Amino acid sequence: PVEVPLKHIMAGYSRDITIHNARLMQAKSTDTHSFFEEHGFVLLQAPTRVNNWNQDHSRIDTDITNIYHSEVEALIREQLFPRGTDFHSINQQHAVLRRGPNSQNNFYGSGVHQDYALTPGHFKDAIATYITDEQTTQETREQFDAKLAESCIVTMICFWRPIKMEGKLINNPLCVLDCSTVKRDDIVLTELY
Image 1 (cartoon, rainbow, N blue to C red):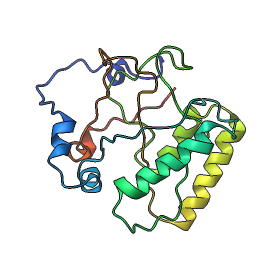
Image 2: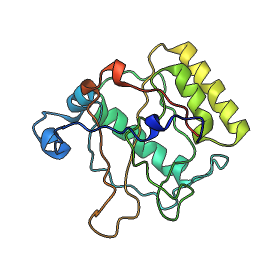
Image 3: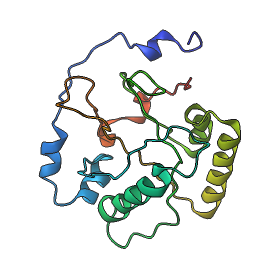
C-alpha cells in the first residue's frame, strides 16, 4: 500500500545473524512449557481430526469449533503451561487464517512480521484485518473488552501447522524468532491491510 513506507516493507539492509534449528534447541529442554516460557514458541507433534479448515468467520458449526478448539485447548493446558495453571478463559475464533495456494490468501507471509499485536489496544485494531465481517469484528472486540475487564493478564498464542503436506517441505519454511532476542526499540509498528 502506498500509505506504508517502502522501508517498512522491504528493509534495504543486511546483517549477519545465526539461525538455529529449533528442534535441536527444544530437544535440550526438560519440558515444553519451560521452553515455551523462555523462547516464546514451541514445536509440537499434534495430529488433528479436522478435515474442513473453515476460513469463514460467520460460520460457527464447523470442524474448527467442534474439533480443533478442544484439541488446541488441550495443548495449551497440558503442554504450554505448567499443570494446574488457572485459566480464566481460553477464547478461539470460529475460522482459521490459511495462506498459500487454494486458500483465500494466495500468498505466504514472507517478510519478518509479528501477527496480531504487542498491546491489547493494538490487538483490537488488528482484529478487522483478520476478520473482515463487520458484525463479527465488533462482537470479537466486545468479547475481548469483557474478558480484559475480568482479568488483567492476556496471552495471545498463535498455532501454525501444515494442513496439506504431501511430501517434504521444499520452500517457504516457518521461521520463528526467540522473543527474548528482540529489543523493543527494534520493533516497527505498521498497519495491516
